[in-house]
Image: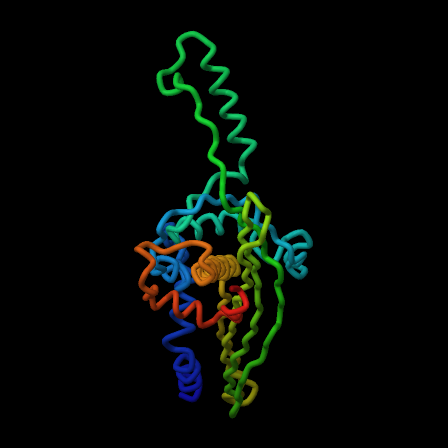
Amino acid sequence: MKKVLMLGLLVAALQGCSVRDTVTAEQDTESPTLTPRASTYYDLLKMPRPKGRLMAVVYGFRDQTGQYKPTPASSFSTSVTQGAASMLMDALQASGWFVVLEREGLQNLLTERKIIRASQKKANTPVNIQGELPPLQAANLLLEGGIVAYDTNVRSGGEGARYLGIDLSREYRVDQVSVNLRAVDVRSGQVLANVMTSKTIYSVGRSAGVFKFIEFKKLLEAEVGYTTNEPAQLCVLSAIEAAVGHLLAQGIERRLWQVAGDGSAPVQNETLDRYLSQSTIDPEAQR
């Protein structure tokens, strides 16, 4: 009877969270889905619409942290994603403010255009490539920057309790990733706007256990637990989306680019106001 009671207490302690999460993790039969998006993505969608879209290019958005995953994971596995440039281009397009031109794979694009020109000189040229190739479009803005910092164990801790051989515990760890994004005028080389954003990466582990002698020489020992790690690549994506939002807010505030309308009335947008309120830049210093 005592053994059943102990097991019942252990299950009840983790009911509703760890048992459900453990079963979900073990099943692993979910179909592929679109990448989940954070609130920063929907902030971009709620930004005011532009008077005209900006022609922008991204040549690269590199990992500048130099951080690798701790052993025994891998000595060559980086702590953050190496696909940040693709994430940045996705955020720029989602905002609706930019026409993003391909530059990261520019050599592949140029090679394909050479193949088309060579095919046009031959007989029986397909109709879809008979016309003269137009020149590639030039950009007004160059988006530069990268992932500039990845700090581990910014905060860590936990709590727990043990009574009569029954213990419950929770531990957590907080990492942090930082992103820099700047808009450069292609004609003058001037940095028009520059922002830095940070996003925490939260990891938590919960466990419960029983260690008790039920009868003489009969020991009951049971343990259950689980760990949840916030995906680092989604945190990097969220930090990049926030950087694009702050970059747009800076540009609107400094009148580098304009929102749709005649410009006579002040812009009324809750999302824009929230981003501007987070800015540490004095607007008077920029005039």
